[in-house]
Image 1 (spheres, rainbow, N blue to C red):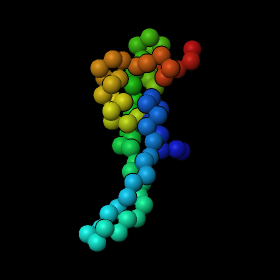
Image 2: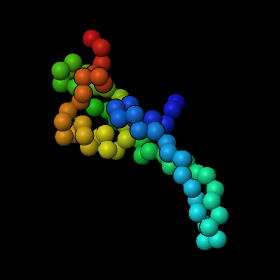
Image 3: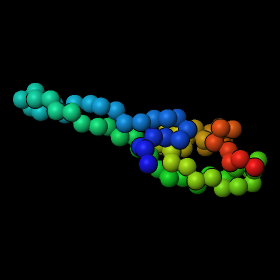
Length: 72
């Protein structure tokens, strides 16, 4: 499974590890993904999503977007 947020599309970033001698080696910065069950009151179903923590906070504030709702 790809390390990507289902709502925001956040994915890994390429960055550098920089040593004290200023040697640079590549590394990946991974998003903070969590598996979350969210209840959709419109469809009356639970939805299991893999979301970043920022997306979880957005859903708590604004509700589940239409594109993530289960199909009836």
